[in-house]
Length: 191
Image (cartoon, rainbow, N blue to C red; front, side, top):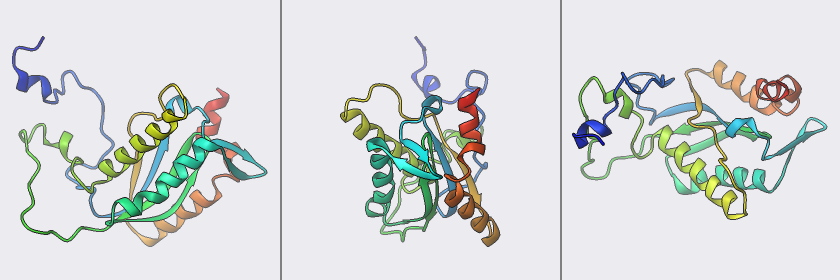
């Protein structure tokens, strides 16, 4: 047991070797983002590709409906292209900064050495949106009797910085079912 409670809760770079793919000191609470969420062990639980079209099963329907509900739950989010694939989801979402009402409480800072670990936490950030989505989908799927983990830990994101990148990513998402046989997440299943 740890003798100092504070030390137990703080990120320790000597113990915790997970490398963050997030951009350091970037708030992730404004702008366009491309995200990919993968199923645990790349298991195809959302359906299958048939004739270059995604055929959602009941779990895939849950994942799709919950993604679409995001804008009902969070008024500062706009959804763009997205697709539920057999073992992952691709989507573009836009986070619009919320208009502040009254004083806002700042997130606590541990110190400069450890602050980057907490940079993406807070309401309205990309991490909180994706975390809530994954949690809701997992809960609904588990209520049907599914046993096991739904999601791989974390997610992949890319900040979309210009119109050309947006167009390229949109086309990739729309064409993903047609390109499933060549998709990296399909190829990993063959290994």
